[in-house]
Length: 183
Image 1 (cartoon, rainbow, N blue to C red):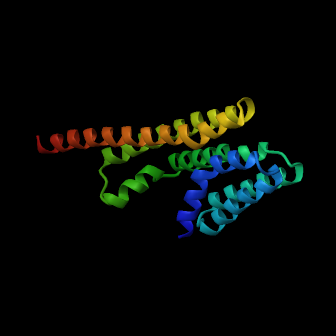
Image 2: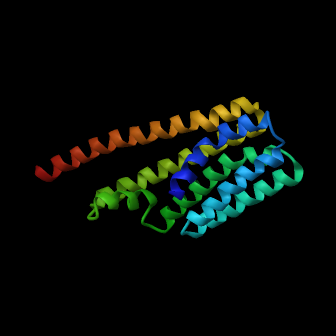
Image 3: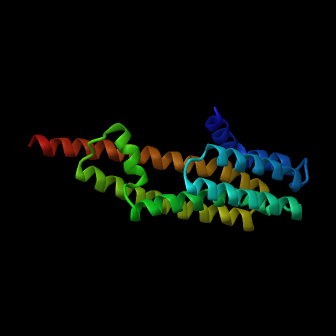
């Protein structure tokens, strides 16, 4: 249940902040970010999750103390940096994140499957660099409305597009691998 609440709040965060900025002082919205940080700390079982929760707590504290919206708007950037770190570290200390997901469905993943999941992990790293950079750009140079639109909708559409594209490529790769095994 807590994962559902955490995911829902994380996905809705940009819209909630945008809505709240016209109604409340930023320091009061910092409570939302603090709640996300605490939920993440409770839900996580790995060090990076605790580090992300601690960083989100620092953003909330900065927003509260300075009564400034900027730290609140940096949360999507923090999420991208955290995910980039996790995915990149898995390239150096395998198995990669994507390989772990793949092994949930196929425990006996072939060598070519491992290679493919490594490539997909690298693509996701590139995505997090690009998405995090665009998120940061909206924080620094765009209106609150553009920030909310990008971080609350466009980023999710881009992520879903990457997932769907990868799924299509994976089906093709599996079909080719299957043909090679039968030839």
